[in-house]
Image (tube, rainbow, N blue to C red; front, side, top):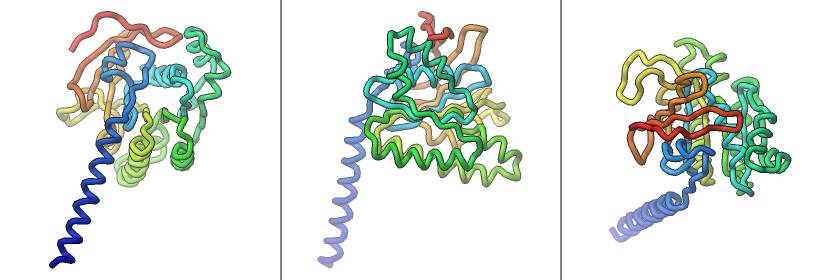
Length: 264
């Protein structure tokens, strides 16, 4: 009986110790500026470390534009990893954004590491490699996957491939989530949008590709909709801190301008 009580006591102590570790991790989360006051406000103060933020929208809704901006405004001495699955990374965009802010271009580019996987297998290998690198380099504070679904949509089309696609995505989304929590870094994934045939409660049209396999692991989800030639309507879909809300952004070469008007 004493042995059983001793075992139970040990289990309880381990559970209490694990809970304390989680609480300390939550206290250590940081906020990274997005380069836009409106977007910072939408995200309750900026890009949160320790989790995944998903930005989704149609093509040309300026998701990659935001990714370039996040790399540019990342505070020194932090570094960014940019996994560019669609081949959209441009040093010229970084140059324009850095010049507008009086930042040294070479120093800014030196803190950005870009990898461009051309298929799902390369994307998964790249994520595995950088999970290892991030764990040994405390200066890396931002990891971007732009976009998460691009190769999976091409290589696993239709319902017959849905199970295998979901299985592989589930593994790598959880690897990214575990990395964000373990190293207290911010992870951004971009995603395309699709129609919502079921009309569920979280999403109106459009919704992100990948369903709950992608979205359930994300702490924040933001929808980008190009409302006209120069403006984006950003909608907060998921957040642990507040409900749905909206802000407008005006697109400029150097990032975004923040119109005063916003609505809830």
